[in-house]
Structure formats: C-alpha cells, structure tokens
Length: 284
Image (cartoon, rainbow, N blue to C red; front, top):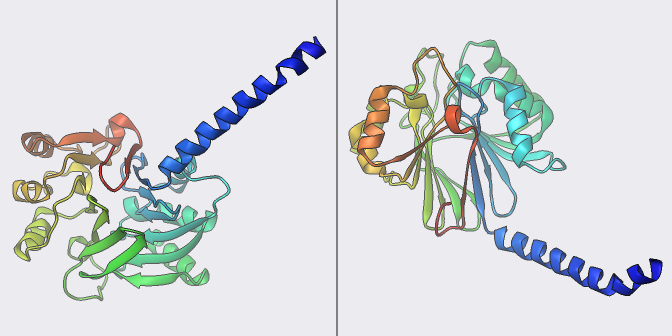
C-alpha cells in the first residue's frame, strides 16, 4: 500500500501543482478588478470599495456598528486592519453611527466629509474619535478629485458653495455627492440628496452619467426625479433599505420611475449585500 502510494506520488504532485497554478492564474486575472459592495446594513447606507491595489474605502457606515463590521469582514481579508479612506455623506445616524465601531476596529488614514455638524451623541463621539486617533481630515467640496489607484479616482460633485456649516435640521444642502470612475466604468454615490439638489447639479451642467447609481435616500419619493435619471442613465440602480421599514422605502413612485427608465433594480432588503466588480471596461 505504501509502495503504491509512493509510486503514484509524482502524479499527485503534478496534480497539486496544476491546481496551485490555476489558483494563481485566477488571482492574477482578478488583480485589476475594482470591487464595490453595497452593504446590507438595514435602513441605512454603507458602501465598501476595494481598489485593484487592495486599498479600501468606506462611504457611510449605516446605523449599527456590529452590522457594518460583520458585512465588511465578509469581504475584507481578516489580516487587513487598515481602511484607507472613509467618506461621510452627511451626519445623520443611519449613515454615521456605524463609523464609531469601524474607527475602534480599524486604522483609518483619511476621513472625508462636508464639515456639516450635528447635535446627536453619535456625531460628537465620531468627531472625538477622529481627533483622538489624529486621522487626517479632508474637506469635501465641489471640484475635488481624490486619486485612489491607477485609472481610479473619486470626483466630488457636491456640496456646492460654502464650506462651513452650522447645526442644521436638513443636510441636503451639504450632502457629499461623489462619482467614482475606473477606466470606462463609473458609479454615482448620492447619499440622501433630494430632487432639488439633483436639479441644482444638472443646472450647473454637472456630468453625472454613470453605469451604477446608488439610488438616493433609500428610494424616497422626494429623490430620483425623471430628469436626474435621464441624465445619469444608469444600467443598475442600487437601493440600500431596511426590510419592512417604517418609512415605506423604496416608494412605489420611485420604483416606477426607475422601471420606466429601464434601470435594473437591486435592493439590499431583497438581495442582501450587493457586490459588483469592474475591470475598467465592464461591470459584472
């Protein structure tokens, strides 16, 4: 039996080498891929981005730290303890609160936000953690371009105008809106912007055409107007929303507009975390 095993060893060894070669080949083929994950964090937004060079970006973090960490761990290697950039679209709890646990769990290099302030406890704790950890802050403003990797950059389309904001009841005018471009592919992140903000960007002749649209404000009827959808002309519309939420999101009106525009709808309450990849030429 031992002799038979030894006799067959060269064949086992060659088979093992072949398997290893295939794995290496597949990984080499994937090294140019950009990963975008619309995380299933309930009624809130959180988008995880991994660049081809394995840099990570987190745009918003949802309402629950444990939930966002659980979803990140499904995608991010367990040994990687660094997130290179966090982006806060606006300081409402359903976009901000998850960052508190993220900041405690990972080393964050840069934090980008509009500078808008909030009176809620979560905002104060988030701000304190940024200061305590000496995380470098980037002021979001229209026209800013952040280079993330080769042929990959994030353009800030809004906020428009003043850079300093007082305590506000509505953050739509200070909303961070960003367009991610990788080669010939593009993704538009909209936070909770409303139709008035959409029209403002269109009136400024902002280039918003994108392959994938993060549907604003969880599919609220006050966002995703017809003019906006026509200008963006996305193939996919990703809706981040909690199952059976009390707001009725996404609304029938918004779903109807998306369907009328021929946009493929993906929803975290139905599909779970939505993962898309781009090789710079196509999205799959």
